[in-house]
Structure formats: structure tokens, C-alpha cells
Image (cartoon, rainbow, N blue to C red):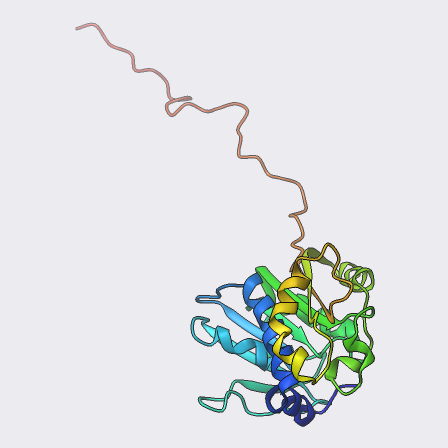
Length: 248
């Protein structure tokens, strides 16, 4: 079941733990996608904390929020780009999206296949999608006072298997939220240091969230190729009788 948009907003914008989580995840997104100049960037779920860096150079930014969650106007400082939608009916044309982020959308959905189907539909050629979900082996999924303690947490194998089954190609993966979900002053101050250390670990099992980037598979052309070839070439003047010269 989706969380209420007011609770998500309060966590990410009004608590120190939420702001630390927002920064840790956003830093990884920016490292994976450093620019989106002239592109269409879309988020589904509650992705507005991650979309702000793209407002400057992207051609278009859209925040899709599922009906059960509710919607909030965003950004507050300029024209609203948030849209309320159904999980299985996104108000977007086919193949329009270059980059898509899913956060607090997949693990809380009762029909995650609908989200993957719509992701596949709206992604254009060369488009990429980034699915961010709670890690089953991390500490954040065990604390229901954060949004990551709700819904179905995943292991990397479970998430990648589900994405492959939906027809996506796995490009790369990583984790974030290595600091514990604690509001103690020590952990909040050292969160950035712990994140940098966590990215260097050989395994990311302690991470609180998994991030898997996928691309859309494009089917190869089918059918019989038509070769532009003529076996017996016809000369330009072939078939025209040669002129005869009468003696003078």
C-alpha cells in the first residue's frame, strides 16, 4: 500500500534523517546521471527530492504521483510539474521519456507489473530507468518510522529477476544509505562519511536501498530482407536497332 504524500513530504523535508537520506540517494543518482541536457526526465512515486537537480538543464521534468499516495504541488518556487495518475495509465505518450526514476512506487504497489509495463511503454530508444527500492538485508527496511520500512523490500537477485522478466536489460546497480536510520547526532553528522566508505565496500549488503538501472530492449527487425540487385542488367540502348548507313 502506498504511503500518504504528506507523510513522505514530512520525512524528506522536515526531519534531519529524511534530509540525510535524500542527499545520500540523490548524490548517487547524480553520479550515475550527471546531466540530462535537452532530455525528458520523469519520476514515478515520490521522486521530487531527486528531480530537482534536473530542473536546470532538462527539456522537461515531470513528477508522476500514484492516486493512492496523493499529490502535492512541486516545485513551490515555480510552475507546478506534479501530476496525479493511475499506476497502469500514465498520462504520457509512447517513447517520450529519456530518463525515469521510480522511488516509493514499486515496493508499495499491489501490481508492480503495471509500473514496469508503463515504464517500458514511455521509455524512448536509448532511454534508461532507475528503480530504487528498500534492501531486504539493510537496516532501513526494519524501521517502519521511515518510508523504507513499508512495502516489500527486495534482494538484488529478486529485483533484477523481476526486471528481466518484464523485458528490461540490466545495465548496472549500486546501493545507498549505508548509515543506520538513527536520529542520533553522531550518525547524522557522520552520514556523508559513512556513505563514502560504504561505496567502497566489496559488497553492498549493508546498504539501505538498492538502485538498479535498466534499459529498454528494442526488438531486431524481422522479415525477409529485400536486396536491391538486378541479375541481368539492361543496357540503356539495348533493344534499339543500330542505324544503317546508306552509301552516297
